[in-house]
Amino acid sequence: MVLVGTPVGYWMATHEFRGKAVLSTMFELPLVLPPAVAGLGLFAAFGRTGMLSSELDALGLQLPFTPAAVVMAMTFVAGPFYLRQAEAAFSAVDRDLLAAARTLGAGPAKVFLRVAVPLASAGLGAGAALGWARALGEFGATIMFAGSLQGVTQTAPIAIYLGFERGDFDHVYGLGAVLIAISAAVLLAAKLIARGRLPRFAPG
Image (cartoon, rainbow, N blue to C red; front, side, top):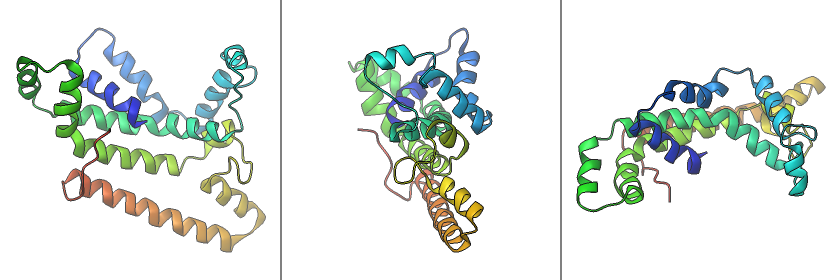
Protein backbone atom coordinates (compact mmCIF):
# COMPACT_ATOMS: atom_id res chain seq x y z
CA MET A 1 0.00 0.00 0.00
CA VAL A 2 2.70 2.46 1.03
CA LEU A 3 5.33 1.38 -1.48
CA VAL A 4 2.90 1.71 -4.39
CA GLY A 5 0.60 4.42 -3.06
CA THR A 6 3.36 6.93 -2.28
CA PRO A 7 4.79 7.31 -5.81
CA VAL A 8 1.33 7.05 -7.36
CA GLY A 9 0.02 9.78 -5.04
CA TYR A 10 3.01 11.98 -5.93
CA TRP A 11 2.50 11.42 -9.63
CA MET A 12 -1.22 12.18 -9.41
CA ALA A 13 -0.54 15.35 -7.40
CA THR A 14 2.13 16.73 -9.73
CA HIS A 15 0.75 15.86 -13.17
CA GLU A 16 -2.27 17.05 -15.12
CA PHE A 17 -3.42 14.95 -18.05
CA ARG A 18 -6.52 14.00 -19.97
CA GLY A 19 -8.46 11.27 -18.23
CA LYS A 20 -7.03 12.04 -14.79
CA ALA A 21 -10.51 12.16 -13.26
CA VAL A 22 -11.33 8.74 -14.72
CA LEU A 23 -8.08 7.23 -13.45
CA SER A 24 -8.62 8.78 -10.02
CA THR A 25 -12.13 7.32 -9.94
CA MET A 26 -10.76 3.86 -10.71
CA PHE A 27 -8.24 4.13 -7.87
CA GLU A 28 -10.93 5.29 -5.45
CA LEU A 29 -13.65 2.85 -6.54
CA PRO A 30 -13.02 0.44 -3.60
CA LEU A 31 -14.08 3.26 -1.26
CA VAL A 32 -17.68 3.01 -2.41
CA LEU A 33 -17.91 -0.62 -3.50
CA PRO A 34 -19.76 -2.95 -1.12
CA PRO A 35 -16.98 -5.04 0.48
CA ALA A 36 -18.54 -8.28 -0.74
CA VAL A 37 -18.46 -6.96 -4.31
CA ALA A 38 -14.79 -6.02 -3.86
CA GLY A 39 -14.07 -9.58 -2.75
CA LEU A 40 -16.05 -10.94 -5.68
CA GLY A 41 -14.00 -8.78 -8.04
CA LEU A 42 -10.76 -10.12 -6.59
CA PHE A 43 -12.05 -13.67 -6.96
CA ALA A 44 -13.11 -12.99 -10.57
CA ALA A 45 -9.62 -11.72 -11.35
CA PHE A 46 -7.40 -14.04 -9.30
CA GLY A 47 -9.59 -17.06 -8.56
CA ARG A 48 -9.06 -20.57 -9.92
CA THR A 49 -11.23 -19.78 -12.93
CA GLY A 50 -10.56 -16.03 -12.92
CA MET A 51 -9.25 -13.79 -15.67
CA LEU A 52 -5.64 -14.26 -14.58
CA SER A 53 -5.93 -17.92 -13.57
CA SER A 54 -3.83 -19.27 -16.47
CA GLU A 55 -1.00 -16.81 -15.75
CA LEU A 56 -1.06 -17.68 -12.05
CA ASP A 57 -1.09 -21.42 -12.82
CA ALA A 58 1.95 -20.97 -15.05
CA LEU A 59 3.76 -19.36 -12.12
CA GLY A 60 2.58 -22.06 -9.73
CA LEU A 61 0.58 -19.57 -7.66
CA GLN A 62 -2.76 -20.12 -5.98
CA LEU A 63 -4.07 -17.04 -4.21
CA PRO A 64 -7.66 -17.58 -2.97
CA PHE A 65 -8.02 -18.85 0.61
CA THR A 66 -4.38 -18.18 1.46
CA PRO A 67 -2.69 -15.59 3.71
CA ALA A 68 -1.72 -13.72 0.53
CA ALA A 69 -5.42 -13.38 -0.27
CA VAL A 70 -5.98 -11.72 3.13
CA VAL A 71 -3.26 -9.17 2.37
CA MET A 72 -4.63 -8.53 -1.12
CA ALA A 73 -8.20 -8.03 0.12
CA MET A 74 -7.12 -5.66 2.89
CA THR A 75 -4.85 -3.69 0.56
CA PHE A 76 -7.50 -3.44 -2.14
CA VAL A 77 -10.08 -2.02 0.26
CA ALA A 78 -7.77 0.17 2.38
CA GLY A 79 -5.37 1.35 -0.33
CA PRO A 80 -7.54 4.25 -1.53
CA PHE A 81 -7.55 5.75 1.97
CA TYR A 82 -3.77 6.04 1.84
CA LEU A 83 -3.68 7.11 -1.81
CA ARG A 84 -6.11 9.99 -1.30
CA GLN A 85 -4.18 11.22 1.73
CA ALA A 86 -0.86 10.88 -0.11
CA GLU A 87 -2.16 12.88 -3.07
CA ALA A 88 -3.45 15.60 -0.75
CA ALA A 89 -0.15 15.70 1.14
CA PHE A 90 1.92 16.04 -2.02
CA SER A 91 -0.49 18.63 -3.44
CA ALA A 92 0.23 20.79 -0.38
CA VAL A 93 4.00 20.76 -1.04
CA ASP A 94 5.23 24.06 -2.48
CA ARG A 95 5.96 23.44 -6.17
CA ASP A 96 8.67 26.12 -6.07
CA LEU A 97 10.71 23.93 -3.73
CA LEU A 98 10.50 21.02 -6.15
CA ALA A 99 11.46 23.28 -9.05
CA ALA A 100 14.40 24.69 -7.07
CA ALA A 101 15.70 21.19 -6.38
CA ARG A 102 15.53 20.38 -10.09
CA THR A 103 17.41 23.54 -11.05
CA LEU A 104 20.15 22.55 -8.60
CA GLY A 105 20.68 19.34 -10.52
CA ALA A 106 18.51 16.84 -8.65
CA GLY A 107 16.86 14.23 -10.83
CA PRO A 108 13.18 13.27 -10.56
CA ALA A 109 13.84 10.36 -8.19
CA LYS A 110 16.02 12.48 -5.91
CA VAL A 111 13.45 15.30 -5.85
CA PHE A 112 10.80 12.79 -4.90
CA LEU A 113 12.78 11.01 -2.17
CA ARG A 114 14.80 13.89 -0.73
CA VAL A 115 12.37 16.80 -1.06
CA ALA A 116 8.75 15.78 -1.67
CA VAL A 117 8.52 12.80 0.70
CA PRO A 118 10.06 14.57 3.75
CA LEU A 119 7.83 17.62 3.23
CA ALA A 120 4.72 15.45 2.89
CA SER A 121 5.70 12.97 5.61
CA ALA A 122 3.10 14.12 8.15
CA GLY A 123 0.26 13.53 5.70
CA LEU A 124 1.77 10.25 4.57
CA GLY A 125 2.03 9.04 8.15
CA ALA A 126 -1.57 9.96 8.88
CA GLY A 127 -2.70 8.24 5.67
CA ALA A 128 -0.76 5.09 6.51
CA ALA A 129 -2.32 4.95 9.97
CA LEU A 130 -5.86 5.40 8.63
CA GLY A 131 -5.31 2.87 5.86
CA TRP A 132 -3.98 0.32 8.33
CA ALA A 133 -6.98 0.90 10.62
CA ARG A 134 -9.36 0.37 7.70
CA ALA A 135 -7.54 -2.84 6.74
CA LEU A 136 -7.75 -4.09 10.32
CA GLY A 137 -11.54 -3.90 10.24
CA GLU A 138 -12.05 -5.40 6.77
CA PHE A 139 -14.61 -8.20 6.64
CA GLY A 140 -16.58 -8.63 3.41
CA ALA A 141 -13.80 -8.71 0.81
CA THR A 142 -11.64 -10.89 3.07
CA ILE A 143 -14.23 -13.58 3.71
CA MET A 144 -15.17 -13.67 0.00
CA PHE A 145 -11.62 -13.98 -1.31
CA ALA A 146 -9.67 -15.52 1.59
CA GLY A 147 -12.33 -17.43 3.47
CA SER A 148 -12.15 -18.16 7.18
CA LEU A 149 -9.58 -20.84 7.82
CA GLN A 150 -8.74 -20.70 11.52
CA GLY A 151 -5.10 -19.91 12.07
CA VAL A 152 -4.59 -19.28 8.34
CA THR A 153 -6.96 -16.66 6.90
CA GLN A 154 -9.36 -15.92 9.75
CA THR A 155 -9.13 -12.26 10.75
CA ALA A 156 -10.41 -10.61 13.93
CA PRO A 157 -13.66 -9.25 12.38
CA ILE A 158 -14.45 -12.69 10.95
CA ALA A 159 -13.70 -14.31 14.32
CA ILE A 160 -16.12 -11.87 15.96
CA TYR A 161 -18.86 -12.72 13.47
CA LEU A 162 -18.41 -16.47 13.87
CA GLY A 163 -18.18 -16.17 17.64
CA PHE A 164 -21.42 -14.21 17.71
CA GLU A 165 -23.13 -16.92 15.68
CA ARG A 166 -21.93 -19.54 18.18
CA GLY A 167 -23.07 -17.44 21.14
CA ASP A 168 -19.52 -17.14 22.51
CA PHE A 169 -20.15 -13.63 23.79
CA ASP A 170 -17.24 -13.43 26.23
CA HIS A 171 -14.81 -14.06 23.40
CA VAL A 172 -16.69 -11.71 21.06
CA TYR A 173 -16.81 -8.82 23.53
CA GLY A 174 -13.18 -9.27 24.50
CA LEU A 175 -11.99 -9.27 20.92
CA GLY A 176 -14.27 -6.33 20.12
CA ALA A 177 -12.81 -4.34 23.01
CA VAL A 178 -9.29 -4.99 21.73
CA LEU A 179 -10.21 -3.78 18.24
CA ILE A 180 -11.88 -0.66 19.67
CA ALA A 181 -8.76 0.15 21.69
CA ILE A 182 -6.48 -0.39 18.69
CA SER A 183 -8.71 1.69 16.42
CA ALA A 184 -8.83 4.55 18.91
CA ALA A 185 -5.05 4.44 19.33
CA VAL A 186 -4.53 4.51 15.56
CA LEU A 187 -6.88 7.47 15.11
CA LEU A 188 -5.14 9.38 17.90
CA ALA A 189 -1.75 8.59 16.40
CA ALA A 190 -2.91 9.81 12.98
CA LYS A 191 -4.03 13.11 14.49
CA LEU A 192 -0.76 13.56 16.38
CA ILE A 193 1.31 12.70 13.31
CA ALA A 194 -0.63 15.22 11.22
CA ARG A 195 0.06 17.89 13.86
CA GLY A 196 3.74 17.02 13.99
CA ARG A 197 3.72 15.70 17.57
CA LEU A 198 4.94 12.22 16.71
CA PRO A 199 7.85 11.11 14.53
CA ARG A 200 6.82 11.45 10.93
CA PHE A 201 6.56 8.55 8.54
CA ALA A 202 9.05 8.45 5.68
CA PRO A 203 9.09 5.48 3.29
CA GLY A 204 12.56 4.05 2.93
